[in-house]
Amino acid sequence: MASDTLAATPRTDAEISGLDALEIAGRERPGSRARRFWSATWPKLAALALVIGIWQVVFWTGWKDPWALPAPGTVFADLGRYLGSAALWEGLATTGRRAAVGFAAAVAVGLVLGLGVARVKVLRAALGSMITALQTMPSIAWFPLAIVLFQLTEQAIFFVVVLGAAPSVANGVIHGVDYVPPLLIRAGRNMGARGLNLYRYVIAPAALPAIVAGLKQGWAFAWRSLMAGELLVVIAERTSIGAQLTYARDFSDSPRLMAIMIVILVVGLVVDAAFGAADKAIRRRWGVLDQAGN
Image 1 (tube, helix red, strand yellow):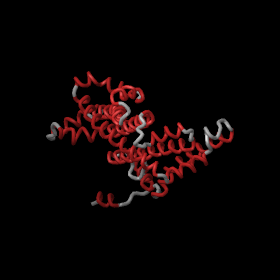
Image 2 (cartoon, one colour; image 1 turned 90 degrees about the vertical axis):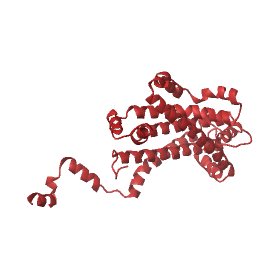
Image 3 (cartoon, helix red, strand yellow; image 1 turned 45 degrees about the vertical axis):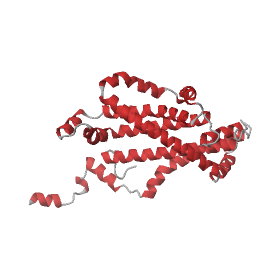
Image 4 (cartoon, helix red, strand yellow; image 1 turned 180 degrees about the horizontal axis):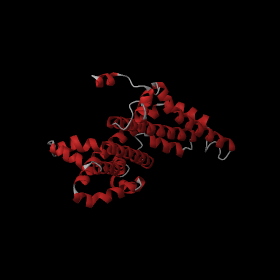
């Protein structure tokens, strides 16, 4: 009875100390959704304002002629017109389709290759270092071969996007599987997990953070490879973001060129935010991120 009474009695401030105090302080920390959004947004806005300010100062110095380096106001005015044009959305549709198809193929190849190398010793000995070597190769170096094999076609771009992204995905899978604790695998086997079930219920969930990191890096390589491909392989009947960038350069249209570069940057930021949200959800599920934390 005494212990029940003691357990039911609220503790005083003097009795709360150490880790309990830190945990309670974290729970009681005020933070509405709007405040958390603002705390995450204002550093980005400050960085953007700083970049635009430096850009404006450089323009004022006259370091380059206005036709080569236009003022921020000129570029953003042209960006507004570009956002309202059909050319942007047609180009985004073509580029987005190429990115989605190429990245999906790279993910499929990378997952299969990574799992094979991670679990089969012969494949690791044969291909382990080769995957890293392929990952370090600049994607632009693949284009001469791609053009020889496929000429100036969609297949040449697809070839380079897959080769640029698949090694990163495979390395993410390999590292994720390598760091799965052997005790966890033995526990799964003792509970009856064998073959594909062992991968599905034990290895894949444990390796998921590293796999997501590999996917994120693979997307970065795929996007870079795609942009390089669209600059080199211009298909006249299909407009794309890269092709429009080439046209703006050929016609010395610097405001439009920089407006397209801003669009490319924004697309990269949006996809990075999506991967960041997935990583945050995984860390919260794993218990390494406070429920109220950012």
